Length: 78
Image (tube, rainbow, N blue to C red; front, side, top):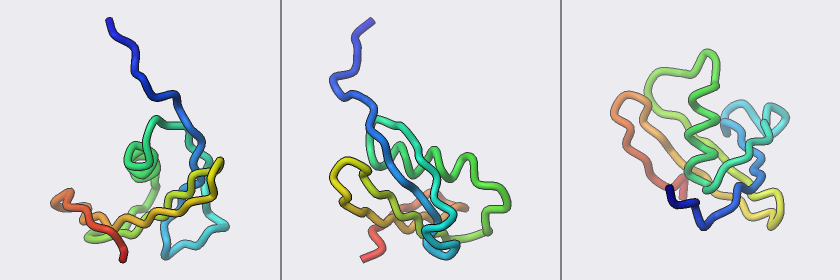
């Protein structure tokens, strides 16, 4: 079995509507995987669309994803 080339990184992830004080630290191999892990564990997620902010703890760089929870479609919050 081949090992992944990318080591897990730490991300601070939160739903934009809830605010950064609801952030969770998540260790994943990519920004996208961290967003998915956060949503999978989100209790009481709203129906429809949600915006997730993912911050790379090491670099401080933020990414925002708008995710349609009914279709799985994603886009940048841009």
